[in-house]
Image 1: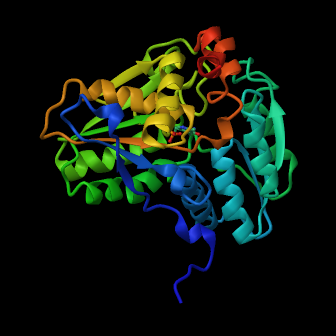
Image 2: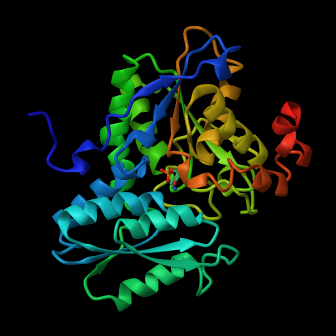
Length: 330
Ligand code: PMP
């Protein structure tokens, strides 16, 4: 019989899908690494598995322990899946800008969720970083994976995602594009691809305008999961050959185009990464191959990027556009 023992055995080995109409004018193939096809729905399944196993090996996480983590949702889903398999309790701390849908998913997996204000600095007592630190000291047997400082985060990509991309492109990849949150994805994949290609693969970070990675001062932006107002140790500051800043408007417009034109229903950070990849494709040639990593799916954002009123409220859509299609029919 053809089956796996547990759903976590399905983490990784995601496909590459070529972008068609969106990359029509490019002479370079632009291939999307579709990470929503992981069983928890995002790239974060990979780091969840690796971080938990490393903590078990080191003795930091003991049987019956509690996993406490500040997470925007995706890492939580991965950790909740792994925790369920291995019998741990999960308590997650989220900033309030994270969609309610995403929080409900965590609760559906059996995790407890604590919500904190987004508009406070990281050192503030109510920030989601501070609250999670406090919970770790208060809960007996608690372990904090700390995806922003855990070497198992970039390592999971060095060991799995990087080799997959190299194998899938038969070593022909010339440019790799990804968003930067903790930096684990780009640092782990980037290091692998640089090593295996002898430094030939260009590593390009996509970043929301206003975030520190593209020289901003931490100005707020609406794309979730990427950009930071501090420098995490999981991000290798030497790995990127280039950082492309992308506006919220461009990120969300591209996210919608990915769904409508490529049938890829993905999240806002995917639109951001794809917008950066298509900018790179304007200057590359037919012998190049661009791979862009799309971290998660779009179902958690139906009330935001895929909602006309929400888009219009932030000026990403003209108010007329909302009813335009219906008015055409009437
Ligand atoms: N997109 C989304 C939706 C995410 O949740 C994350 C993780 N914070 C990223 C992109 C960035 O990945 P990384 O943390 O590996 O840099």
